[in-house]
Image (tube, rainbow, N blue to C red; front, side, top):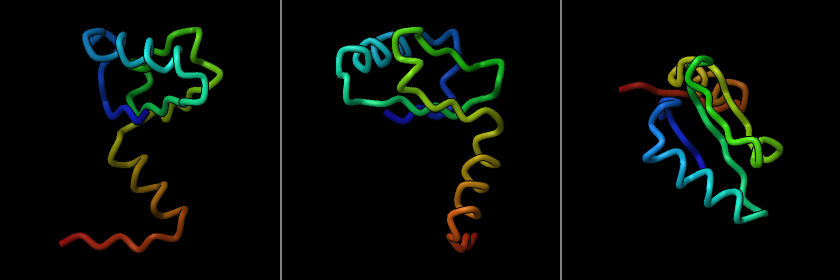
Length: 73
């Protein structure tokens, strides 16, 4: 499951999502957010990748590192 910028207090979205992941053992959780907004349930921490920072910068860096040629129009 990919989460993009959902704040730590928005449990209307986060709680059911993390609960679903905890029940599906072969699923993982990836979250992009500012460091102070990262919120991960303890029972899924071993299956979570938290990418801290500005989403635009983080995604751009991933594309650059992968060799993808970014073209803005």
